[in-house]
Image (cartoon, rainbow over all chains, first blue to last red; front, side, top):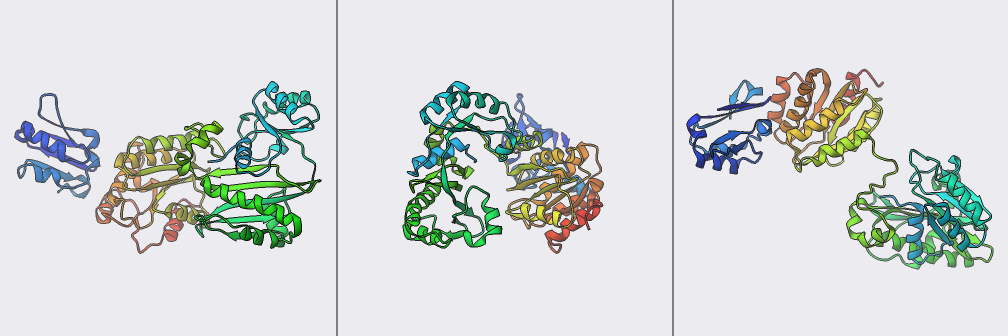
Length: 80
Length: 402
């Protein structure tokens, strides 16, 4: 899944998005509420908060390597 | 927070300073009752927070209670400085032989209260200071320990007042200073203090401003005076623009992006940083610019909050461009503010490179912020450019100034 703001884009691998434990963990660590747990228990991305990303890397640290990608759209799509 | 005169008079009375017999009235009937209590000629004074009452017809003299009631009907209809009166103060019309001035005001530079006294009262103290500087005495005082009679005496005597007058004025000035400290005032002024024919002194009018942040410490007093928790008590009512600024700030707990004051210029300001707002506002004006607003951002507001404030300023009628400027910031991220103001432009269908005259916020995460500004072609400056120089550039870009 992918969600885009003006400045930031967030990508989560489909397998990781379906992982309910990871969904809860990402929701807990993100300081600006980009991640949420859907009623199904799976991960969902909160569109209105994507541009609030403070580039803290907490989601990257919480997820298996490569499962979550933070993209800086203003910096030639550089990955965090 | 400003008090109405009738409240200020009550505060003065509670401090033990003699005041004339007075009453507050919201109806002609109440005014008549107050005038009957005075039992003599009275003055009916409109209760608004702005000046210019006499000129607007908001002060009327009455010889009888019926006349006071009739004047009340008229005065309550008069709008003064954009405000309808809350009521009227029915006051004793005192026959005074001389008017004096006494005030205590917070000196923000010295960070101490300063007592000001003059034997020339009844007119603006600024006018006295300009025309008769030898008739104005001043002294900074401690805001921790009580003012001594000796200190008050020195200030009064420095204006040439001597003898029994001096001795009678000392307790009034001393109590006024204590009132100022006890009530966390930023201004406590009695103008005039009247000397009556029998040689006694009495407070005839008073102005009081309390530090807004201290309101919580004085709940009992405010409740007794009938001051509501939601009363802003500013000299004028906030404009729709200013209220919208408050709404932006209150919608999100993160950081500050508000404290908006409306002006009528064409350069919108998104400014902040521990006094930086005032410096930048003054700098814009010093270079001939006309600010459309004052505001304060800081403490790391969110992108959405910054965006909300920038949108408000960008949409203000008459605003051609905005200048986004702060001092060097450590507690606010440059990249977050950059995102907020650019997002505001984009969501309003505006070109950030056209609408943002200059972005001058050096500090935390500035490299990331500059990348964002580069991506949208916004002119920016780092810390090598002073706040004054940045303000000058903004004014030049808008085609104003010298």
